[in-house]
Amino acid sequence: GYLGGRFWSGHHHPRRGEMPYEYRLCAVVTVLVYALNARSGVAVGVARDKYNVPVPQTKGPPDFERVFRAHSNNAEQYPQFLALMWVFAAFVNANAAGLMGVFWVVMRHLYVSAYHKGERIQTYTIPAYLILSAYSIGIVGVVGWSFIQDFLM
Image (cartoon, rainbow, N blue to C red; front, side, top):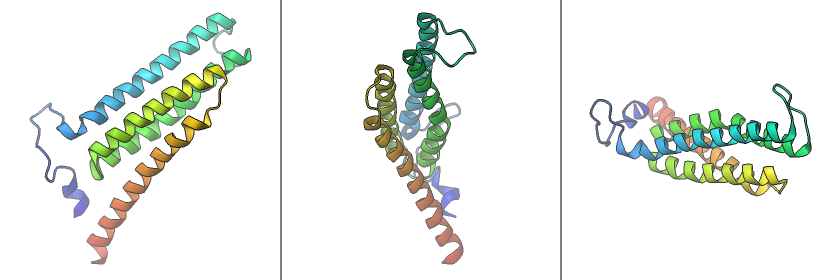
């Protein structure tokens, strides 16, 4: 079937322990997501000290709560983003997945910065959600087309 041969079809076959070249940008994006999460988590720790909010409390002055919510909101996005990016890379296009991933990370970084300052965040959330939608549509399209080819033609 289409999906079974898609992952390695036409791709460079790596040696053991080597990542196919076209997936390397997705790997870089994964590391950037980790770095963004770490940066955001450290910001929460700094804000706890600055505003005297002990662990495990999540309520405090508005400035603390913005830093805490920015981190929490991002942490809620990481699993679905990473899963969709890697599945899109494997079954649709790894280069497109990586490029959209870089854009997503930039938007989420700007989102965190804006949230910390109490600025408008929709400017950064809407493009990030559009990327998640594009990943989803691409995946559904490939799986649907594969189903049509394998079972209906």
